[in-house]
Length: 93
Length: 333
Image (cartoon, rainbow over all chains, first blue to last red; front, side, top):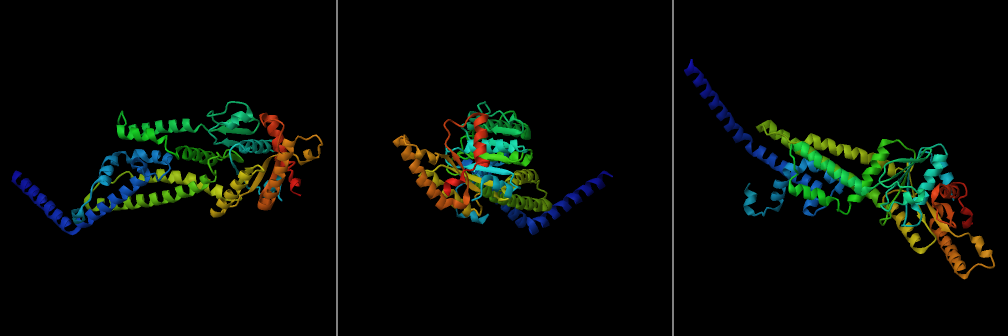
């Protein structure tokens, strides 16, 4: 009994790994690209809403404030991304 | 020439009246007088002052600044926005929202700093005032709404602001929708949790709905009438010309101009008239001619110079009478 259960577990783990491998081979690039596009859109959104934080006033400040709560978790990484220096290796990713 | 009364008879759908013009020429007085006249004629007007200098309080001789909507005579409602107070309250609301949203007791220093400094942003007052106006119009409680534009350059800028804002919200909605789509797709493939897109989108839609309603009413010449208040002097004429040109650029039409502070021409017939007054009257006559040449189709009323300040309900009633019942257009004949 115990043996069988262990065997089942191993095969399901194996199945998962194989599945993961195929998913990775077939769609990793696509997913990555999507997430990257999403990140750019997110950057754009942050820039429009709270761009004045970096000295780029776009939206009237009254409405920037209204949308600020939603942007709170992203502010740190967003600033880091925008201020990051770029070099030619960035194009590889 | 269409008088002010005839104008409103011809345009019964007007629900917003905006008075613009240079500072000190009588925008607030004209707004108060118009609201007074509508209240006396069975409507329920709201006179709204966006002027940070609290002129409505002076005109009605009571403290209205930042006190909310007050009924100062049957059916005549008045509100004088205290933009600073409104902004401070709004900042506090945002702080509380962030605290409850993320379950924190203290706002991160960086974000708090941003909230604090936002009060000093150049456009903060304008956008807060604009939002207050949009809120009032959306409530639909009053008819008509009489707005008194603050004298920053052209009050007309507020209209273009609405349009710019609308375009930006369009863009933002688009990026949010696309972002939501991409994260949904990624989620389906790999199971990555989505963000707060729906909430942000609904917030954006709400702002937009309110502004659209307001903007649509503002740019619809059947719903909104813009008047320019001027006096027979060079600078006011130039200012009016610029405002009319700006309206043209925005594809809108000015409802009319109201000429204020005009000395009665009959004074010239008095033999003992002082040289000083004679010169002023002659100067005004010259500019009245120019006003006729330039704005003939726009002239709606001529309000005389009074022998005292137009303050208190009695004087406002007098101004209203001149605006609607005795428009004094004969000075242009």
